[in-house]
Length: 357
Image (cartoon, rainbow, N blue to C red; front, side, top):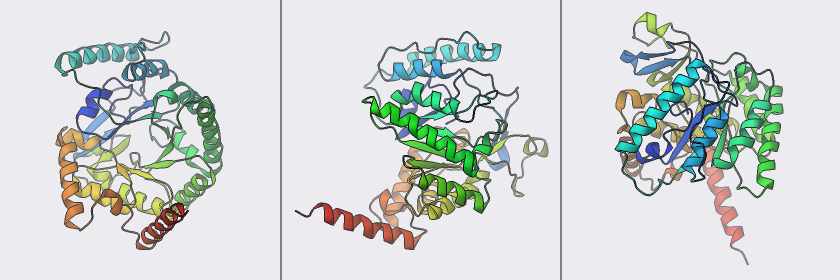
């Protein structure tokens, strides 16, 4: 999420070799985000600092793009009447971008893959849960999974939703909204929560407790950008000291450790999507062993280019084979021998019992 905020390039992203694509964050109403400049490259460190602030064309525009992708003849990105000047400018740029893509893209069968929709909260919204409930109702029918993003550092007060009681209330409301969709004969839509890497151990334990207690939450994304600035950064200080969330290579170890802790706190029972500094097969492999079932790439594409997707896949395949494993499943959670083998034993036992007459 964050690369294609409004769903304008979904087919093209799949053609780069991604097995799944996540758009967003999408807010219910259009908003311009924070003033520019709001994104900065830390070239020496292969990092990025952003303070976008959930710039979004809004749910209606995203819905149109999703309808078009799903072949439902949506509006493809009509402007909202209350959109600001900045949002209207972005709409224009999106129109140009779509026109260019139509000219350079070979018309082939629609790419296959899993599509996630990441939901955010409007900056001026005073409601704790309403924006997310609205997003689930509006965009859930077009998604293969929904992300509840409560961890962007660039929306005031958003990360407070990671606290125990606010998180419990939010997830209960989101699960109810998702279940209402499911009851209307729509497919079951997994619900995933995206958390920050700047949490204390106690805060991570609280989140794990709520996730396990709230029936109907299907996964975690670990992690969003960090507010911290590692002492190892060597980029110019006028860039390093910019306000915003840091991503890319400097986030790699922090996010991997956060994955490792959340996997242990959830006893490996909640699938984790690992994010942060994935730019080669080794970094992806580290996250899988720490407990991630899937990995995402964004910032490292800035430095490695779109070909990084194929390189990661090939390098990861070699690493798995060289260590004597036959599949990604054999690697997930290998840093936790006790949990790994216990879950393997439980899976084999369950399979054996299901085959009994």
